[in-house]
Image 1 (cartoon, one colour):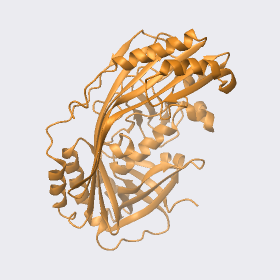
Image 2 (cartoon, helix red, strand yellow; image 1 turned 45 degrees about the vertical axis):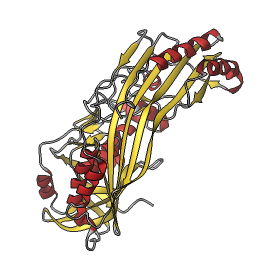
Image 3 (cartoon, one colour; image 1 turned 60 degrees about the horizontal axis):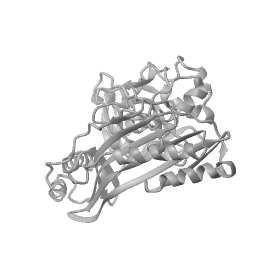
Image 4 (cartoon, helix red, strand yellow; image 1 turned 120 degrees about the vertical axis):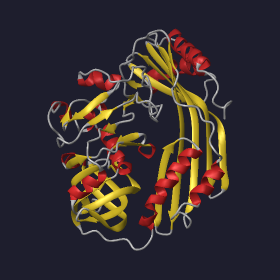
Length: 443
């Protein structure tokens, strides 16, 4: 893997600059080129056997040009021929483009940021790690599947305002799933075989959830204690909600509530794109804006939103370095990076006692998310019924839901066990005690 992780963005930076120059020479009023490239490796093990192994270079690029008040974006899966693609886009923008003003960041002329993630190496083999995991108590009867992914990705941007920048992301994440006849539980951690062992220990601690009969929670609403592995999905969902782009999607009233309390006083939320070791850590965003920590909620008050250049301009705000390009043919959108619910001071045991009776969610059978068009946050969880502050019976596959703003107001307390969760796109959260969620999913 050492040779796979070698290389530099110099060629891509040069190609991006030449592509922008070609577009401007062909008559564009503005232009940008964005390239995402780098090596990747993915290994999949089922039991002791390696079932798939893929490695190679990944590359995708987009060129966007402006002319006559119209814009056109064209994409490619190689950096070869991008200058020709740019010239063709300028010729076609009048007939195939759409009305759009440019919104670009000005230089410095050239910036290059090297990622700080630790390079892989020194792990025991995955086969040895999986053999050790399969011998852990409670996992002997489970079908184990492990996926280990490593990639080094350069994100390269050049535009007609003399910006040329590149940043590196090095990621190494391992996933481990345990399948029982009664259900599945998954864990993920940054690292290789060492991460598989960590995930195995967590799964072994949850094996009791998959043995014996599952209790049936009463219908209606219940107090809920979310462990960090499930609470982090709520943090990720909230970070994706509190963006300037959502102001144009029916949440414009949020801008008027800046400084107002929209959540309980127990809720603090922060986006942290420069967190050391985070899976989404980066020094600049995908428009070249320097990233920074962004407070979103403080004591339940809305104090910030995540912005791209365009959403900041439309909202009369400052960009926050939060632009992402999940689909290169579309405009950049604001999104969270290592967003976290800030920790409190109480242990999860103390929160369980404070809850008294309710549902404790340890892990997820289906990740938590906000349903489009409804505003409902939903999840399917595994955990325990809690009575008199103690776990009383295992629960499997319990559906829970709540309107996201009702959920924000229902946060009663935060634990002291902040954990970042790769399965939640690197978001982090401590245990969260919620006054209520509905048992069952909305119809």
